[in-house]
Image 1: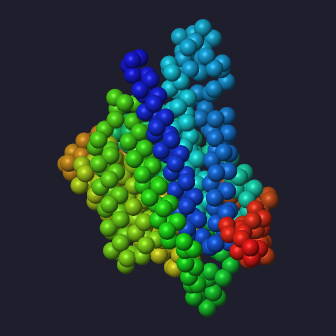
Image 2: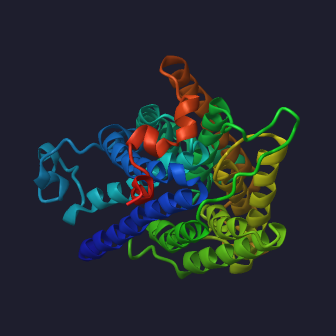
Image 3: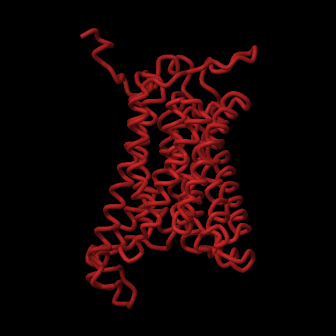
Amino acid sequence: MDNNNGMDVFFVLMGAAMVLAMHAGFAFLEVGTVRRKNQVNALVKIIVDFAVSTIAYFFIGYSIAYGVNFFSSASVLTGANTLDGSTFGFAKNGYDLVKFFFLLTFAAAIPAIISGGIAERFRFWPQVLATAILVAVIYPTFEGMVWNNNFGFQDFMENTFGAPFHDFAGSVVVHGVGGWLALGAVVLLGARMGRYKSDGRVVGIPPSNIPFLALGSWILVVGWFGFNVMSAQSVDGISGLVAVNSLMAMVGGVLAALVFGKNDPGFTHNGALAGLVAVCAGSDIMHPIGALATGAIAGGLFVWGFSQAQNKWRIDDVLGVWPLHGMCGAWGGLAAGVFGLEALGGIGGVTFASQLVGTIIGVSLAGIAGFVVYGIIKAAIGIRLNEDEEYQGADLAIHHISAYPEEDTGA
């Protein structure tokens, strides 16, 4: 294993870089969906949220999840020396540092997911505060339970339900948690002005730029193969099954969303993401046909969930992050307990009961936390732009420049 340290560092670093690039995908997906007067805000939010997430996760969150901190000399962190002369130390070549970087990019996906739901009317600094709280405390608590057996969670699941809760790359840990946290924020924030009329009409607000929306989707799709495949976190653990299952789920989501969304480009491009969200949990244990089915169901679920939330339940989730990440993430947790079974061509090592209970625990904790965190911030300092600012647009109200300043000046 020592001979592979350098290769493992490079492998995980490349995964971190690919998932970091996904944040550009989050940004352009939002830029293409929101109105032109809110495009700058989308770009600034994503990069600032990543910066704040890095600080929160480095100093607090990673320690909560894994019991590891970085308050040691650089020689210790790179594995050149042990910690305080003991047998404990960090892995050689700084492997633990790039592992932090990789898992940070997962943690930072939480506010990036939420950003799309609260777009066009959320105040800037209250969201920065929420990001710090969620990434420092809320997300790493459940992350550590699942991926580090904190509180004996996985032991309990195995002893009670016959297998640990299986979530290889974060259908529930990352996407489900992000989507259900977003639900609380969106509900407490309320709909955009003019979205729902008193006579029952729903006013459509079309995407501002379909090419940007599509670009965002494509960037996310490519980066997702780092998100899933590199979750092995070592060269020895890499599996082509994860790559092919990700591919099959992605195309299943595209085709299902195309059909159920009646050729709508927004549904089609988000369908790819729905499939990838759902396959994360079981991508290492499903048969490719099972992954295809998982992605297809997710694509249809996203179209249904988005339509219901917007038109029936009047939840103005701008990018549909609750259906996309929350609903499809929960489905992914369950799907691992179905298509991961040996009886359906999977590798096994899972039970449906464990997947069901683990998924319910994850989305319940996130749903409650979303209402609590955003509820407290709303009561303390407020979370919504005033009517004049919302009408003007977040770009000018917050950042004092639009996405197309030459048009504003007539230059």
